[in-house]
Length: 592
Image (cartoon, rainbow, N blue to C red; front, top):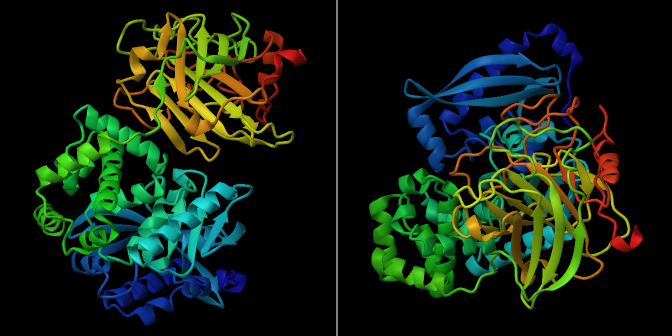
């Protein structure tokens, strides 16, 4: 167990010692001296094999380290004494050009100053649970659900059987959000990272996307893997940072139908990354890898993944032709016909006139005032009434569950902006579990606490709609500026969306709901698949902020489905400096 030496801290120039230790460590890795390099790390990191997550294995066979030693250099920018640890801020140079900034950490262990990974430093009080060969490490109550565990175990078994890969233990660090991912990795904020040499995953969700990267590294440890293969297989088997593979397959199908799915638009690394929305590249890559696996088998895909220099434009074309015997054009045509023939669950804009009503409820008019005195943004883009829910209805037919929301007014009729400005969120509890705890989720939309036993969330906004599970993984979505525009508007001031029963089940009288309405934050029209947020409620409204709150814990909710205005105000005003509001399920009509 690493600890701090107070005596050493009092008598040693820690900055100078840290500089000397760092210089010696860099000299060791430049000479590929792994034994010497390992001695500079704390015991736990040595035991786990978590040595230099940034560079990977200390070996001349490590492409990344070899490139670094040939072309790059470290320069200490600043050393900070944080009391419990020492932080080194280091600039990475390629030749004479600064290309990145990294943070490294040191602590005293057994009277010696040692390097320590942020994984060990910042998670020493976190909880751990071992399931199979995966150890989940998480903070507070953010433990994996049984569904998360089964999904990960299924992924590991699939990869082992499909590609004959066998790994030991994998450490899965589940963190709150992309900023925490950055804190534990030292890399820019994003949904997750995999460190295959160390068998470590750091992720803001429990999807096994990054686990796939760890396994596939055993097939080809090079850092030069074509992103269509590297990210495509991770999407095909493990989903992505925000959606399941099935959802992404459905969205890729939409892209291909609209002429935005050419193989050459993703096959080359530069074109993969420069698309206006890189999420589209991930969708198409996952679809393409699914196609290769289903139509040609795992052995051929493994051969392609191992193909030398498959990263580069000319060699990936040669590899595809050699292994699959088809030109790029023929492969694209075959892939497209395969995709378009797939029957995938899709959200339907609109409602059905022949559906059976399962739940309906009126909401009082002119109660779009939040906790009693909320005011709209002053911009003309937010006309009064677009946040005032009038009626909510749930119905179903043989294949689809329909959700209809009628408002006092909707903005931008008959324009390409659809009903932009209105953001509605529906939470559904399908199990009627009598007990639950309140938990803060969807802070960027609600800024409130919700029951932790809900199964599904439906988010409807001017840019489309999404259906998510309890882990905030998207199960289905409508694409920007295609079906979502116009067709979701089933009346002058009414929105309708259909969700496949296959995704959320058939409604029953025991289903419970929360329906909240917020002001949609301004977003560029390129925003498509991730979930937008609500405008914050400040003390006074401006063109881009709402007014009526004098506390950062005030919810962003203007209207809440409730039997009376007074009931809504009672719920939404129950916050203070120490707590946020807790939103209950709406009471059935029979209980009023």
